[in-house]
Image (tube, rainbow, N blue to C red; front, top):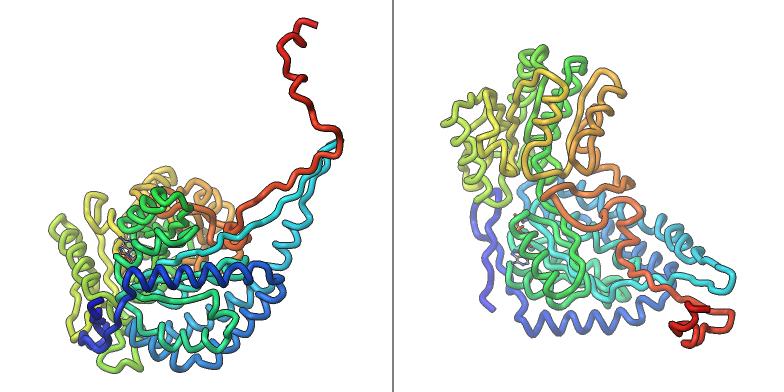
Length: 475
Ligand code: ADP
């Protein structure tokens, strides 16, 4: 296979290369994992918890090389450290929760007068993970951890845009030999992802709607379930009664964190007309104070676009909005310093015929629109093809919840932004084009990796075929 060049998002220079697996190598790796899974699934859950807990320790012990590689992948340091700590936290959380969820499964049995049954939970043998570049470590392992605890083997194909973290992470995996038997990473581009879908028993995909649709179709052909976590165009509603300073703080953070390269970033803001001017002034003041981590990578809040092409897409959306009458109050111009940065950008006079209000932006852009009535706010928030998450800011919880219940999205944060990113206990589905399949969060994040098999015992005599003779009706 041809080596794949990888651009450093901060410098804009190609400084890394990797060779993706050939079709035969990937197939051989899948076969190896399948063989190892037979023993893994027969181990007790306690054993798997112990193995994953040791992996957590090695992850923390090797945090420096892993976060350094992750920082090179993404052009940001603090978020890289946060990703590693959050992943260690996720391992800890699932190791604590999985035993109770399994106990529930084991305890479920039913007795009718003569027939009783119990369920056996059978893990998928091999789960494939296809992950994106925006949170390379978190999103590679978020579904893999519960799948491993369930007794599956996992083969992960991380994004070709951000593969540097895999080498030091593979060393941490190798330090736990039982885990290395059933978990492996094979970075590659789209063709490797496409082949992976044909080799596994279930696929977990995080990425764009466009690629998600391709993966979903391929999974349907392979007759395997696809768990799709796709994009969003999250709206925020700010009512007349809201604490505007609080709303401005949360919305700027919710739009700008990780340079807006998060599916749950806020990308549309609808504000009641009576507080519109005041709110916009507060958002502009906060957005204008944000700095970028250039020229000093050790300073600044906002990193570069991880994938330079995304900077081009965001600029096109801004230019299209300006051409259609929008006004830029701050930011607005992607800066090229080798890598590409965009200062937080606030736009007003936006309309729903602009690309910016329809397509996922994945950048630090805050378009603000006025609304007059609660019904109108809900209608505006429910516009478009996405339904990932949303936020509502209101003076009372009752008012906020009343609005939140009418929004077509899988998670709504009240008086803050992107709470779905920190509350992993909440079960949530994606609405509309934002995804498909059981919730990655909450109990189903673990239980969805098992097929339920019913083991049904007849205690009485079985019914003979003679019981179905038509002449019996005449009697
Ligand atoms: P992004 O990472 O920008 O969200 P994508 O949705 O295109 O972009 O990519 C997400 C993941 O899907 C990446 O790991 C990418 O390599 C992979 N991928 C791209 N094309 C395909 C495909 N045809 N089949 C399977 N995976 C793919």
